[in-house]
Amino acid sequence: MENAIEVKDLQYSYDQKNDAVSGASFTIAKGSFTTIIGPNGSGKSTVAKLLMGLLEKKAGTIVVDGIELSDTTVGDIRQRMGIVFQNPDNQFIGATVRDDIAFGLENRCVEQPKMDPIIDEYAAKVGMTPFLDSEPTNLSGGQKQRVAIASVLAMDMDILLFDEATSMLDPTGKRDISKLVHDIHDQQGLTVVAITHNIEEVAASDYVIVMGAGKVVLSGTPAAVFKHQAQLLKLQMDVPFVYKLAAALKARGVKTAETLDMERMASEICRSASKK
Amino acid sequence: MPISFEKVSYEYAPHTPFSYQALRGVDLQLAEGRITAIIGATGSGKTTLVQHLNALLIPSEGTVRVMEHEIAAGRRFKDAKKLRQKVGLVFQFPEYQLFEETLIKDVAFGPINFGMDADKAAAVAAQALSTVGIDKADFEKSPLELSGGQKRRVAIAGILAMQPKVLVLDEPTAGLDPQGAAAVMELFRRLNRSQGITVIIVSHDMEYVLDYCDQVVVMSHGQAVIQTDVKGFFESEQYMDQANIDPPAIVRFRQLCAAKGLKLPADALTIDALADQIAKRIGR
Image 1 (cartoon, rainbow over the protein chains, first blue to last red):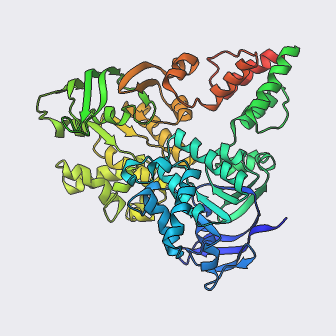
Image 2 (image 1 turned 90 degrees about the vertical axis):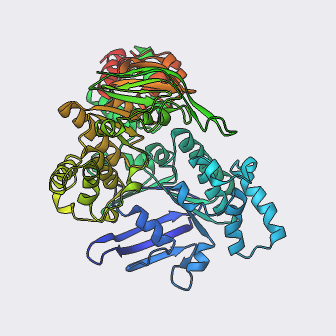
């Protein structure tokens, strides 16, 4: 499979003494929904900033869509890969929703007459059409994140990075944005890379990269990664509820099939109970 | 002495086109020495409610009683300074309000502002920073050098340095990773159990409400519609429906099983208790 992102031996240090990223290597398949997890300070956000060329790497290589990231290619890469950050208030720059989506397009020298239909299209995609002329103070955190996503999508990106984009939202906002991101991924075949602490978002992804102390310590499908419970616990990572319950049942002599799906596990237990 | 709300209403920007009634006749008792969760949908009045606890807001109607203080509609409240030493309020994302050059100076700011001399304030601040788990070696660091979870704990230390009897926190785990969130919840439990501090937490995260809180107050459309203990709340499908919340995983699992015909006891609210019940039903 073709790779959207290839990272090899990546290194970065904020203070010249300790490496925040110390030899991370991973690949992200084109069209995949990949999540990156790891404890605080494991280097997740630093990797995202390095990928976008917002920080300059100390060593290693980053290849995006077949282009190696360098001073001369960073502009090109930013035409292909966009990022949505954590804080909804820190990335709203327009006076209105319309202006905010227009900002990126203006920087790309899209002509005014062509701009309006693009803005309308992407505002509709994220469900913000009724708010096009609203000011950011009148929007909820979830709505602002929708606008941030629309702004990135409007620039016709191939790869979307999300750096804990839902962590500051309330449960409804979290659920809405997660669903929106999944819908966009499914419909448009984009590559999505989401840094997250939300274990259910991880369970729903194609591929998981686990970071610890600046390196990739585990990677694979969610089912494969969550098998390493001891290692995840050592990293102080959470394990999905179904895995915890399966472990507690196993200790009581009840075996269950390995699944990340709560509904499937409930079905299985209900079947076993009715057989008795 | 408990904290009570009697027929408390609050209206933002009254007599203007922007007026908004955030609280509508709230009647409520908050137990002393317990950890109470205030839950409810966005816009249900949770933040407005807790801002009455240290008289940041004065009721438009009704009376709030906190210890010996009475905050009543239409009356000037004179003891705000005294009350605010006893009731510490930590806002949402309090780390945005760290402003001093060093952690120790930031935490000592409150006590100094309330009239404590600098040496004593520094000692109290050091104590508060230790309580929230900040290393002594880091006291002289700039807040900018800390992680999000650490900053949050320093901001909480700033309130603890005033040695409050009641600690009120508006969404203290929002935006923290699971370890950071568990660390602050552990901290509240420790303060409650060892120092008897009354803790009132506005939260959206039902996993933490289930694991760490004693009581639940549900706000809905500006009213306190349910007041009960945590177990009673998560055992009741009716309460959870009414509160319109995302139940914790263990409750969702119980609901899924019930829908498929397996009724598990509602009071099995830990993984071990639930596993025991399932093992029994499967016959091990």
